[in-house]
Length: 542
Image 1 (cartoon, rainbow, N blue to C red):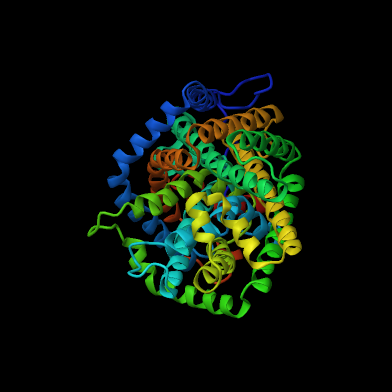
Image 2 (image 1 turned 90 degrees about the vertical axis):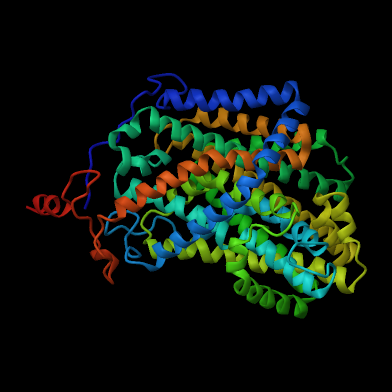
């Protein structure tokens, strides 16, 4: 069993409300986010224009870079789950998981993609249905299957492989290597104790800023969709001002939730989200064209598997369409920007899991749920476009936030559709809260170098900061500005991810080849700690 010296926490605030936070990373991250908030408040049009220009200039490079990077990450994650290290436990050899399977899966999914998947589950397939580079005849039944397949591609194995890799790296170095639960720890095999210096501070700063922009994008989409739902239900104006009010209200709830702690706040909200989501999904599967939806889901799964390699390496080399920039590059940048947030949150709740069960739970369970969710909600909208009254595509063209509620309105009687719309709106709100409170918790964990219970004041401060950034980006240009911001934010952190992968693979080389019984897995002499765990165990026993 590996034992290391106590975690070092140099350069921290010695007292006051920010006691224990890293001074340099906290100051740098706060300054960068604060600068964006001030610029967005002063000249929101200038911020929106700058983000759009940077995205356009970097688009051609990001196209092939993001596609290749995310595909390589998926291959590495599959190797971790199937290869020689699959029985390595993310913790000490005899540890068992902290959370039960149901709670664990609920927290995995709710913290990962809840708001975004609810927002795009209908809007995206309807958009692809009207035209994409893979379908020669838009608006046909074949185009409907292609649309669902492309949507699942953006919400399936590739995206969750990014989260799985980050979570595995952080959990491994923290729970097995006795290093801080923070991004800098994965660099230990490369730079050793210097992770506690300016290099580590820089990595954590990138992680915090990337996380803030990723969460801000998600919360902005959630606020816009909640506003659409409230407008549909009770006639509240669908405007930026209303959306800013929603951000203020829900961010306040998120701060209250995160102050209560992960076990009480995030855990119970995540479980509630899961059951609300199941209820909404069952509404679509039962009230919608049930038989057709089941056949559609199965065919979408087959099409996804058949075209997975092609989609993984597609870079639009023979065309001039901006489709990939608008969709795949946006998604991969969004997933990358969320990586420190969701990866660390997954790591925190996954102590005691083996790499094998960790990898395949994080990869397969959310992907399977996404398949059923997209097939149920998006498939219902596609069915009514193909065989019903239609009108959903026109609504999405006017305003993507209307997609969910227009579909509910089409498939059910007025009374039943109202109930479903209320459930959907509550689900958006609770997903909103769980995304925000999980993000706040992760940010403060990074800045305290892995403290499991960060101080309350920084949680409140970062909750306010995330809400403020969301507000200025949304006010400055709406969904388009949010998308540009997250694509750009993911780029610098992607370089950090590459360095972390190199350190992780180097550390794994010191692990013995995995035996069948994971309890027998142990660490030999660690090149990055210099401790012989076998001899130390024998010494302790003696």
